[in-house]
Image (cartoon, rainbow, N blue to C red; front, side, top):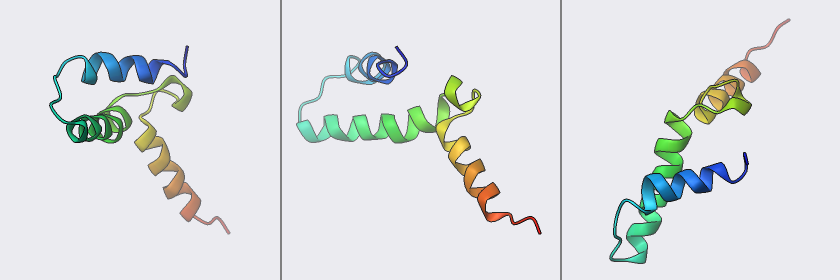
Length: 68
């Protein structure tokens, strides 16, 4: 279920709520949902209930710190 959950969320929270007159508007809405709403706002259990963005940011910060 974990792999299909983002698709279910995308359909219910983005695609089914609006009518898109052009394919370009649909693509823009999906991109905005994926990169703004889903990755920056929603916590995920696989990331210890942090957002994917926060997890990625923490990994980048810790990888730059050198312990000598």
